[in-house]
Length: 411
Image (cartoon, rainbow, N blue to C red; front, side, top):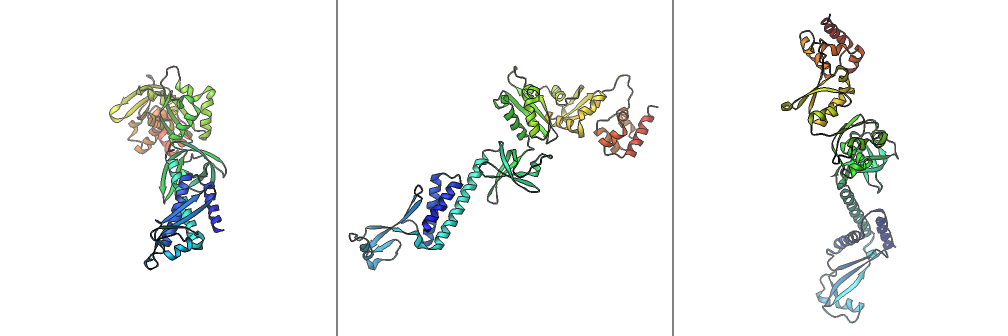
């Protein structure tokens, strides 16, 4: 009966786990042999035959026939008188092979076998998961939310493997419920505490790159290359693309008819604004495109410091800087330059640089104003008090005083 139970256990494992037959048989045999070694001190004189089709196994022991007086090891030897009981034809020096019933080893041996087997199968399973996912770093996977914790979400893939999506790798506006389907990219696969740990991300630029490959056949086919991606997840991203075929407009192909291709990506990324930019090795032109939608009048590159001075009409400055300084920050990351924004003043438009007021206004206040693109007196006065309060960390009272000092200059 126990034999049958054991076999049931094996077939359960075979059903549950994605382990190939040859490995399965060798694990079973190793497990039996470890019990034999424990019991007899060696397994060298045993043959273990596993028939996984029928779901049974046999253990045969080989012993040498010795005289009754020379019998020293009952596991490796059998006395002539015992051998004759099995078959009268046996003679000294011959080998007797008889079946050993595993049941006779008792319940403890059977339990030990079961535990050994479970442990080995678990190891194999972990190994399989690790190796399956190690080659999938950078791939998109889809899974189902199984459990939600404060700092991470447990996701189960189609094969029942456990994947982790940490809070830090989720888009800020991501909201998942148990049972939701989630798409993410595999960013890290490692062994931690003897267990495979598969980390997913939705904030990685690679996730956005893979989404483009899925939506834009020309990228998948290699006709369009993504040169660089920078993003603030859930807010804004800039993607520089290049086409190796002048007949293909890379930006148009990525956006699609009426935005059809990019819509799916934007939805997946919780309405992240995606600017697709035509890459060029002409730095000035690239910076100009990266700062879209702002119109630039002039750019001066300061190569030794890696900075670029960007001059714009006053009404274009806030567009270039963008909400919370996001546009200019991402444009800088995309182009590899620190971008400094300056207002292009009209010839007849007398204005005064903020630095001229260093005696009357504290330097940290001036820095706050410059950080939002205001570097002249008029650029500050052009903005309302509410706007200035909203966009800087300055108190309303401070702003009123500053405006007073600045407006006095033009009276």
